[in-house]
Image (cartoon, rainbow, N blue to C red; front, side, top):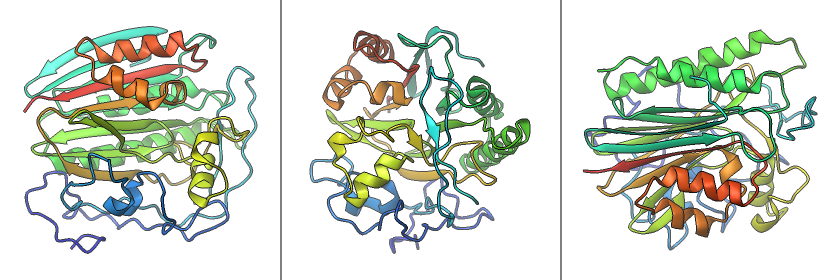
Length: 343
């Protein structure tokens, strides 16, 4: 049985159930970690289908066979760390417990997948601290966004991306999942060892794996995954950010989150703590599904309605999303990876 009480189907190739991994658990509610029973919250993969909105294309999905995507109990968060670099105000809120060029675009096709990937330094920054992974051969894609202003954000995102690029081909789905978890843990440890406290070298990461009739998404931080299905776009991931927690606690409105003084405080990242918790969600794939992985430079600049419109484009949607972000004077680095499921 899954943690939600639903029976687990036997044909999910992305199941971790046969691996010797401890089940994740949710943290106890704190002032900055809201009770998961709050009503009317946006789509929250940590709480399963019951949190979906009525018009969400995922609302009718079959029971999630892998509800092991909670987080280990965490201690009270410390104050948000201040930036040394005034070019970027992204902050990590600590809890205990190949390099991207300024402009880069590519597309690839392998079997049942077509993907497009683009990244840009943006309109203000001097360095691109985003990295991406586009491995249609393995059915694996990722976006990593270095915690700018902290030590070596570009190095951190590149390390995460290179670790994922190094996953060998011809592995089973469960072995790919194990490789992702192990490599991100190793990257987390390497980043922690590379700087002396209180410095941090860290990066967000969002990873998509497609295998058979299922997909899995794993993430830490506020880089996002979206799914466009039957003309409707839904956010798959839940931001690990202070303002997301405040929205869920009812402290602020969702529409006020981006203008909040703590809008750039993230609560989880690769390299931000001794242990790394990757949240995870899985579901079935349908022919015609289109996924978007992006850094917050995109989703914090473009309104969802425009993102959905451009994501549906038949001509290099990743490049269209990047160009629209630049036209909206996006200040941050911006990265988009778009994946089509052909069959």
